[in-house]
Length: 79
Length: 145
Image (cartoon, rainbow over the protein chains, first blue to last red):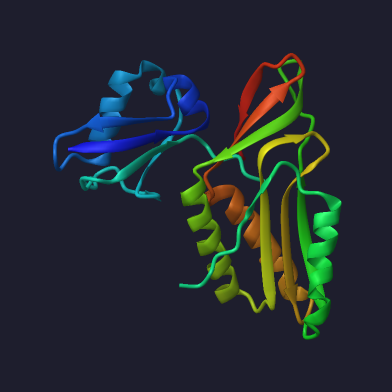
């Protein structure tokens, strides 16, 4: 399945991209996606981030539905 | 579905904007207390360099969902007449205002508790990112405590 992945803040800077499409095995979990992205972008190893699926930060073991919008979110800095 | 208010303001939040937001409540005569919080961009010194501005960005759709959830949760939890949240997006210079939270109620006590809850929750849960820009155009990324 193909997923739209969005990158923000220091994460977008580290991967040098704001948005891309990633192919993933159907039924893959958030953790598996995270591992795939870390192997693609080594710099992510050193950065702290959460993964939002359809705008919600989910448990790492939850399988991702196709057509989900994924976002890699670095630590928040509002206010 | 209830119409959502826009939270994001391009650039800094002006004192005129703040004054007129408060003034708009004059017709709501059940209100006896307003309380507000203003976040101001601080000239932090980081590794010998001084912050000149913060460039705010956000996962805007998720941030708007979160702001809405936080507003609803606050109105359920506290007996307020109204509440308003405004946050900057884009560049805000040091000394300028980047967050304005206004709560209004019949009596004062609840406004202190509601305001603290709102500001803490906004800082913790809303996906807003801040690029701290130094004088020499280099930058670092702000992280909330």
